[in-house]
Amino acid sequence: MFNNIRRNFVLAGCALGLSLASLSAAQAQTALADIMAAKVIKIGIPTDFPPYGYVGPDLQPQGLDVEMGKYIGEKLGIKVDLIPVTSPNRIPYLQTKRADLIISTLGKSPDREKVIDSHVFPRTISRTTKCKRTGRNTRRAGKKPPA
Image (tube, rainbow, N blue to C red; front, side):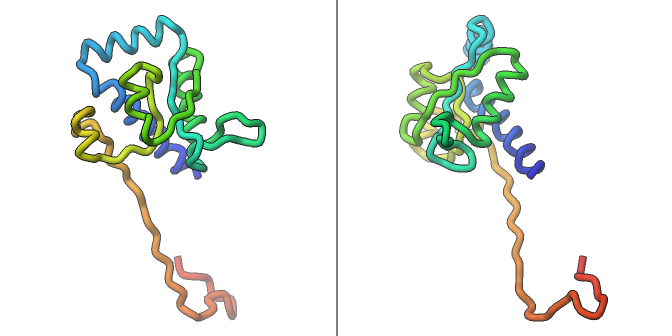
């Protein structure tokens, strides 16, 4: 669980980099300065992709992406305005400044490369564990399971 949270923090950092790296260095610095001056960051999060983003029983956004957004706001010392986004409107929300940052899964595609530099797409690391049932009971006669 902790490794998943840590991985999501890294991915959120990449997402922030994605948002700012799609701008020139001067524009990125201005965007960050504008966010800090307003003392609020508008973060787009999906609300239809549990466990990363979903609407909870209290009708408020919840999930790992929401927690990441709150963490970023806490570290910057500013208020977080969570904005629900969908897959089709994520990039337009950034382009129209309706959101300062999008925390979401984002794959590389030819259409996106026209809008966002391809070198800023973060590479995600995932680990898959394969399990095989052997059909034998390893917990018999005091034997310890294999490590």
